[in-house]
Length: 282
Image (cartoon, rainbow, N blue to C red; front, side, top):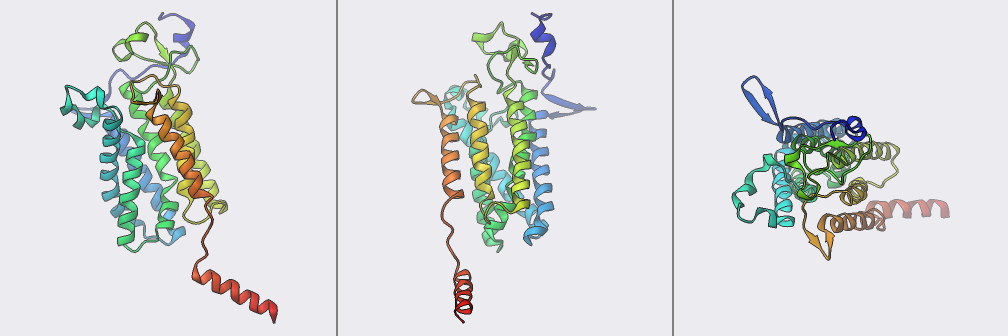
């Protein structure tokens, strides 16, 4: 197997899920999440001046939204895959071993962030437009943690970009298979493409104010849907279908409904249009 063309063309997994700096040992999964958060905050702050938001406000919001997001992500993972924790419930807190559900994290983080923004007097529509491209950026970097943990890969494959998985991380039914679909890499690249799309749409002012986040939700749902169909890791099922597939479909439909919902005119817009009509009558 080692000398087969599929193995020779594939890329390896890291030999360890930790990064050693002298005597210091850093869990790669946690480090990638931290780097993703820092990158998201940086990008959001860079985008603040265009929406007249104080960049320092992003730091304040992140201190509240990020912990909420981590709790929501872990809760989502545990609730949708609770059978894997039976008999070892103390492992629920071992986040460094992997197991964060992005839908739960994003929902909790956005809700807390918007709530805090309202208390700070920040227009929520402007805030979500600023933050929207930062979310897939954080996800893309965080997916590198799955590579270090040798998890969330897909079905066995002989594609030249397949990832080699060590025996102790392979599913029992595929114990003799060496190379697999690198679904974490697919999702990483999809998210990076989504970042560029959101930045382009925002620069061109294609999407109405306050709705850029809905484009992210749709894009995430579409990407996660096809990636999820390739994965073979244990997961909760509903009506014979992986729960995350249903969540992806809900994200697509919900995001589209919000994006294309009729725009309500504000009182100032109504008065402006009325004034225009009066001028034309004169």
